[in-house]
Every structure is written in C-alpha cells, then in structure tokens.
Length: 61
Length: 164
Image 1 (tube, chains in turn red, blue):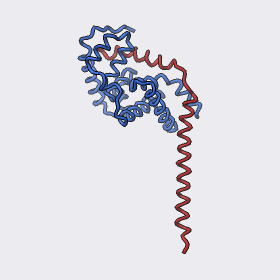
Image 2: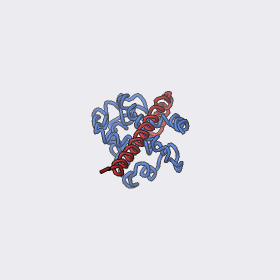
Image 3: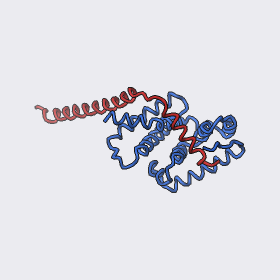
C-alpha cells in the first residue's frame, strides 16, 4: 500500500466534514466559559491578596 | 476578536472535525474532543502571531490537544481494538477510498496517526516534526515503519485504489 494514494481520500474526507453547518452559539459558549473562568481566577487572586494584606497589616494587639 | 476567531473556525471546521473523527468513534466523544480543541485554540489565539499558516497553527494546537487528551483518558477507541484479522474483513467490505482511509487511520497508534494525517495533508517531515515537537529522524523512522506495517497488513487484500 502506498500512503500517497490516500492523499485524495484525506482531502475528500476533510471536505465532507467541512460541509456540515457550524454551531456558532456552541463556540461562543465555549469561549465565554474560558472568559468566565479567567474572571473568577482574577477575582479570587484579588480577594486573596486583599485578605493577606488585611491579616498582615491589621494585626492589633 | 471573537468574530474573527469564529470565522477562522468556520473556515477550518472540516480540518478539526476530521481530526476528531480520526481519534474518536462515538459522536459524543467527537463532540467532546471538538469542544476541547476549540477551547485550546481560543486560549492560544491571542498568542498566534501569524508566523505560520493558520491551518498549520490549527493542526499544531488541535493535534497536541487530542494527543494529550487521548493519553490522559487512556481509552483509545480504535487503535488496539482493531486487530489485523478484523482489519482484513473491514477492508474487504470497504466501499470506497474514504472507508479505506478510515480503516488505515484507525489501525494506527496515536502519534503515528498524527504523523500520517500531517503527511496526507502534504506537510514535509521537517514541518511535521516542528508541529508535533519531534525530531525529523523520529518522524522519518515512524513513517517508514507505518509504510511497512500497512504494506504487510494489506498485502493479502486485492483492493485497488481509485485514481483521483
């Protein structure tokens, strides 16, 4: 079997998969999931820094 | 930026879906892999500087995502499940070049599959090695081994390729 003979089949396979309609809503949901996660991490980091600052500087005696 | 990204995905969805189908059989797994690839592509979209072709970048991110996913899951769908005897039966039943392509792809190991897909896409060994972070020697060796294995597996078959 010559691997090169499968090249047209791969192109055909790729083309057939590109004909299906793309669910853009689904892609937007995935993107938003990433953005929401990074916002949560950012908020968590800020809160942690604020909490640490309060603990360090507000130790009364 | 989002619209630009969606346009790129729309233009290259055939490529991404083909990779998902090459590595997963069930539609649920394919969908899952598709989502993971989109996720990784979006994460690395900001760092894409356009130094390579957009399709090369998509191949790099997608294949590395799928390979990591498959490795993590430890449940390869087809590689180990199709033996040589089953392969022969399937080949005999193959109705066309795409069916034969599927049988060949599903018979390969994960990394070899990625190499063969990139080879079929027309990439040179050096480019394949750069996309998959391998050495050129490793790519050449693996391709030669795949060629030899396929030759041995399909030598008893009387399947003739249709000329394009």
